[in-house]
Length: 376
Image 1 (cartoon, rainbow, N blue to C red):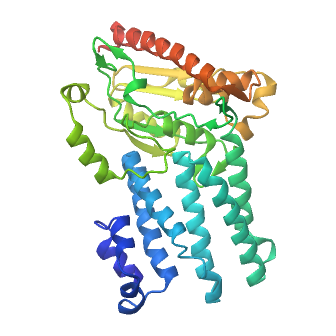
Image 2: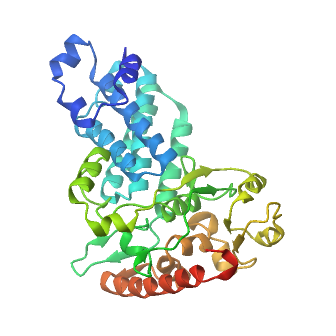
Image 3: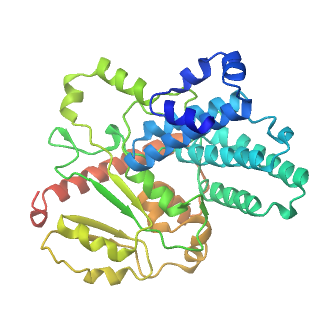
């Protein structure tokens, strides 16, 4: 059955291999319906998504996207409603929700708008076909998606021809400060703990808007990574390409590995991690409580706390737009525009401001490196 087939091929199958299997083999030899093929591909896409959550490797996220996009382009779930089984329609709705999560994380705005419209139509079809009152939890999912996308679209970057540019905020070699001829400092970020405790903040899936922004702020991608392109670069493709194009300079750069991320832990769980040097960022109106964080193991501790008070006009909108301190950490220029009520900025001005910010990062990185109390 489908479950056994996923277990057998789940570790090695690629999107190209799955879609290259002749239709007659899938339909006749294995006796699979199209929605079942879609379910197999969806499970593998979800598997890659969980690999991404475990490793922070964005290429796994691209692999997940490639499977979900293949399901969409081949319309595997198009006739799900004709099966007269509500559980099959639920599988279709879950597929759409998972595809949207991946597109949000990859900032594929062009794809997102169409998917949200299609999911809305599917929910309406589900409610009407099976006479379910108000659509229950799926109406809530739709509201969460719309609220999340609104919060993620606070600033538009426009080119001269009217096209909008998507700002990518993940770390790349060209955005990491160069000190003494090498990228970054002697610091190595190995683990990241993201604690979300904003129950009323806009969220989608398991992520609040603040957690979503911080995820990107600590993820490293190669200089070739471009989530906005329509071309899919998978994990295997990236490994091969890097081996073929590796240079002496690339070798010296010592590309950092992405840190492990842990979501939704209780703040008291941070204490065991203080056995090693630790950097804590607190976004809270009670952040000063961390100023007395116990240093039980005598290791260096840096605690960056948000202000205890902010202008009312900003704090009142934090549940809709996210906390502004986290917004600045995620993208300082976007945070600056937000508090200045600027919703659109020309692309050339954006690039000039980003250059100024890079100079600031270099100064900060130099000061951290030269700080005697950190023992670097």
